[in-house]
Every structure is written in C-alpha cells, then in structure tokens.
Image (cartoon, rainbow, N blue to C red):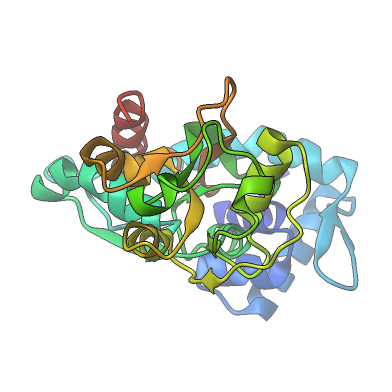
Length: 294
C-alpha cells in the first residue's frame, strides 16, 4: 500500500478533531479537499476508517488502529520539520486559560522565556471554549479547570487550587469564631457567577449544607471579587493564590480553617500534533516547574 503523507496527515487531523470541518481548519485546507483525501485513503486501505454522524465522525476499529500506528511518527516528523537550529523558539505559541490564573501565575512564570525570544499569544476563556479552541487548532496549550476528554488531547495535572472563605476585618469582627453558615445568612455574598459555583461548593463541602441564597454582587472576574471583598462588600470564597498577599497584610481575613480545604485541580492540555515542538515543550516544562513552587 502506497499512501502519501498528505493523506495520513489529513486522516490524523480528522481522527483527533472528530470532524472533517475541524480537521480542515486545523490544516488550513478546504473541507472538500480533506473529504477527498480521506476517501482516497479509505480506498487505499480497503476499508472505512470513519463512520459519518449527523455532527462529525467517529473512527472505526480500523481507523483507531491506523491512528495508533501513524500518530507518533507523524508528530515526530512534524517536530523535525519545524525545527530551526538557529532559533531557540521557532514558532509562536498560542496559550489559553482562566484570566485570573494567567495573570497571577502563568504569565509571570513565562517572563523568562519571553525575554529570551519566545513569541507568545495569550487568550482567556472558560473551559469548554478553551478545549474547543485546542481541538480546532486555535490554541497550542490551555490551562483548564476541567479535565478535557477530547480524543488526542494530552492532559496532565498542573496545580491544585485551595479555596478559602474571606472577608474584610470589619465583617470578620462581627462574626463568631468559628463561623457558621447560619451566622453568614445576613452577610452579603460576592460571587464570580450568578450560580455562585465556587461559593456553593464551599458551602456543600465545608458547611455540609446547600447554599440557598443568591449573591448580592456578581462579577465575572475573581480579581474584581477580591477587590470588592477587601473594600467591605461582604464575604466570598477565593483561591489562596489570589488572596495570599491580602491575607498576609490583614486586608482580608480567613473566616475558617477547615481540616481539609476544598481543592480544585487545574490541568495543562496540549493539542494534538504540537507536543513535539520545541517551543511548546519549553512552555510546558516552564509551567510544570513553576507550579511545583506555587
């Protein structure tokens, strides 16, 4: 069987993205071109490689077997072709993640590589959009608070967020020690979203009760939540990385110290086909090393 590399590249892009449209976007080709290449490959191997669905495709057993055999060689070939021995970081890296974590942790960690010549383009977003952008090739790496389940996306734990219930000293002085859910009923809540997912999770895991109130203040940026709580707007639940300085200075007070504080794992995901690129690996290694000290 003689098959061109172009056919195999298109096949692998379809396998990893789960759709011909997604593969076309990833490869920078027209959708009919990818469809024709896939048809030619199926004719060459003598069996269907995908089942067509109303939305996208799913690989057959033969498709999965072929992907298993060609993925690593094609990725290594792509890495070799992208190498430029005279350039430390041959290509731009596209990175996404939660806005607050990017600003407070990720970008300071990557200051060194950027100073050394790395070209970096960064965008903020919610987990679902970040994973969609990875699959479509708009991002090379993403930090996400939900483990991606997309085929072909490489995922590894990056950092465990620890959450703390906080208030300004003026509010903290009015509350009992230890504070209870009942004692907080008359205190305004400041939350990231209308459904207050972070606060609700804290109530459920620490107080072992459901949060039945709606927030008094909702703002879709945890840094703004922090600023409002420091100014005396009420109480909230924040990741410790975001309020460590305020806790140390006394601008905020931790209202509880539970034996097992709520945690949430952030993951580092890399899109298919770029794991072997030197500059992508540089970003990955830098973030994993930095996370060990966060």
